[in-house]
Length: 163
Image 1 (cartoon, rainbow, N blue to C red):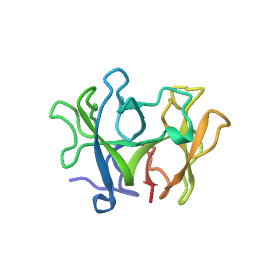
Image 2 (spheres, helix red, strand yellow):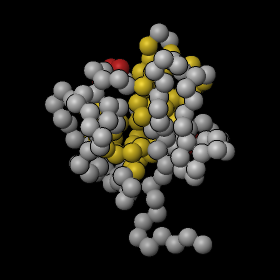
Image 3 (tube, rainbow, N blue to C red):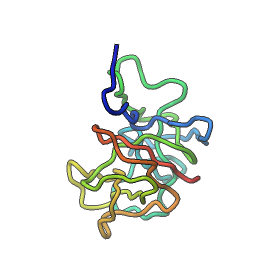
Image 4 (cartoon, one colour):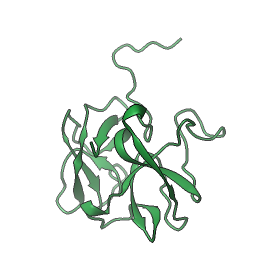
């Protein structure tokens, strides 16, 4: 039996949190630059989805790499952990709510602005990470997204995208 003393975990990165509100597209993954995790932004290059590599603009955002539904990863990965495929088809959230890993020191707040790191990466703030504060040319704002609340103790929060 599990007991949550204060707050239930917010989710697992890349999990669609409100499936009835989601629009998801299957897309071909560019095996030369595949997304390396779920719950991260993706761009389209040559008709295929790619991870962010740095230097992207706000217009580069095509959607968010999400876990396949109704499954949540392969049987060889641990609970809550899953590695996206490096080729084939990947699911991209075009509209809806998704759990993401919050990066950076600034806390997310309800209706707060969402930024994506595109420069000056660190271990805590990787390229393609979602953040709650602008950092000059190192981040771009996702103007059609907002945080739905604060992150949990593990830094997981929910964003509403393209609603």
